[in-house]
Image (cartoon, rainbow, N blue to C red; front, side, top):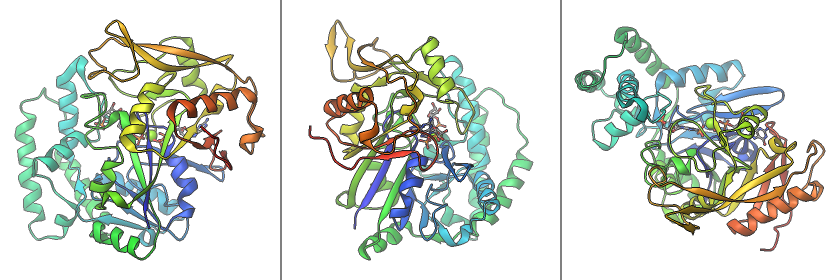
Length: 428
Ligand code: GDP
Ligand code: IMO
Ligand code: MG
């Protein structure tokens, strides 16, 4: 069997958690392959709301296994809090959650370094979630990191202390920040005990064996492709490969094992943190999207920047990921808009372009928009594509024609069931 992938095509928060939760029932295993507690994936069902940071979004579906893959970075303190939340919700996590031994650990001092580095950058700060993501991946690639598997070895404490001491030296080059390391460490080591309640596995063997046995695997992305370390709006990105390629390294599977790639985009666009955002609306319309769409970070609570959908950027991320199906979320947020815009090209260097420039940050880009009629109606009673008001059908058709990928699902609200599935693929 193949590994299907769900990932975000914009700057994160596209609604990945909701879609993974919806589809998880069709799979045997749901696996996170990158990122860490910088992610905030919201699930809503039966009148309840959950925000997951490290734990895969299949965890509420009975009878399936969830794996925190080797490409993920884990803060045991945050994981412990999440696990406690699962217990309250009646989920027996010991039975449905595994962790890869090769996943790296976020130390308290990684979080401190993240913060100190951002303070040092001043106006140029990335807008990091301050969860220690960058410093932890730096130690991974720098070959200094601590992994889940290390916590079972007699030299764990020693390795921890060596890395911590290195971090304390490094902190000296940054502006001073306040911290109480003793209490942070006590909490961290206490959380390692909770981490040990989860079966630790060689994730790569586990996944490949499952595939050989005919099991269906869903890989859940975090962040979005425009935050990818290689192809995103560098340096305003996260520190992992958020694109499909990251599934191979983040779980240990070969490229030919990838099946469907389900790319998610909002019907508009948001971004949280710093960095370029060509279609950002710094006006009342942007505020309206934020208000109606409740666009506030699920991890940090920060207001998200809002703007129109950006088709050149989507075309780019569809190319990078090999997207085979598109999911449009939050279309209901624009129900009262008289018109809806979509950027179809950029103007820069005195010409029109379909491609993104080398650096969106330093190139002054002017999006060229196409305007669509709004639908000015509630979508509460829409159960099939056929029921969508005409302007939505036309908007979706335009997106499909432009992006050349079939739209298979449209999300019309935050609840699990507020999803309209496509029965027939529209001809291109
Ligand atoms: P993720 O990080 O990609 O999982 O997305 P987040 O959970 O950070 O942000 C998506 C937000 O939109 C959450 O508050 C969801 O409950 C909400 N949401 C998801 N799909 C829809 C939708 O179709 N309509 C509306 N109005 N809200 C949605
Ligand atoms: P989900 O999975 C939106 C952004 C941060 C910052 C940049 C770097 O919920 O879509 P980091 O903490 O990774 O060093 O921050 O990336 N960012 C996200 N934005 N959704 C996310 O995750 C994000 N994870 C990181 O705001 O701009
Ligand atoms: Mg999110």
